[in-house]
Image (tube, rainbow, N blue to C red; front, side, top):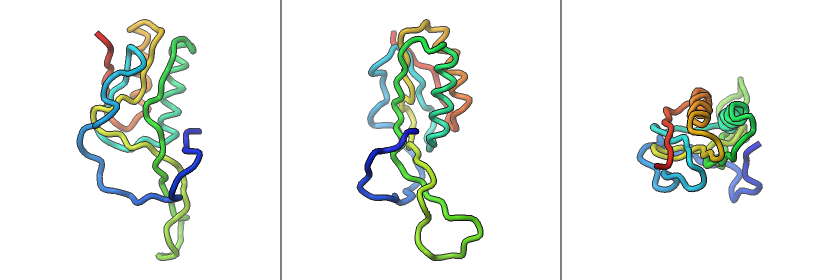
Length: 136
């Protein structure tokens, strides 16, 4: 499961709505093919893992896959039917904040058609709109 080994603080503040373009991680660095985010949002660990599994399944574990989105933001949840007060809830899962233009996955060692189809299947598992990008 994707989560940080150690954090400075156990719980984070919620933060404002995610807007704007990615300042880092907006170009291909490792592979020839990539899945780029066209919108902003928050990806949970389960969504990243579901997309990763669909890519590896479609490529038949061929090629090399890089996950460029790391879930390092703790998301808290209070138990159901709990009264107001009593502090912030416990950490339920971790998530990754994705801005517009960020490369989420990179792939190399497969043909363009296989990579495009794998990323198409992975995009259906994600809550943000994405596009297939490749090196010229």
